Length: 209
Image (tube, rainbow, N blue to C red; front, side, top):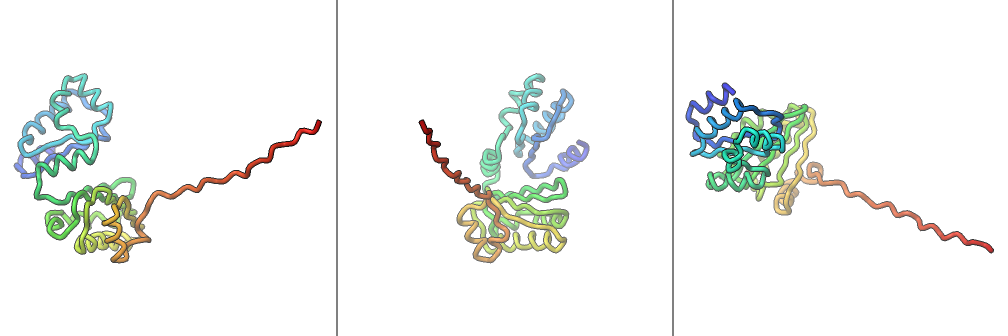
């Protein structure tokens, strides 16, 4: 909490996002912290992402629902839409998560040259090599040669350290672009198809009378 306060005291020009999907309990003091932080940063843009049922129930008990509800984004597409409204010039966002000795990266928007300049690419690259890498392109609208080169670098950094890398969630255009440069079949993962087992039909038994 102190690090959050220190960061906000620097008056940074950035959106503030609280991911409360893993929040198991919040009391009056915790909600007071949220209220103070969000109120201070509201003009620049602040959101609460993926509140679970328990979090919403506790907010209701402490009568904080009316304050929390307008800032809440329950699902990723809704969050992307609101971020795009606030920062229309930002064509791409990146989400980086390290957990259980694995690394997950999600790209939102267009992964192209102009927008890559705004990403903290060095920080993303430094996070590679600490476990298997999963790249989620479910919300990536398009990708160019610079974006593909960036993905290739992430994959190379992961494999050099002895870990596997995979890409999933691509639309047709992104998938085609990845296939052209040869990142394709070995990396793209899709849900395995389940084959139905054909049961041999049993012949009806004859009843002899």
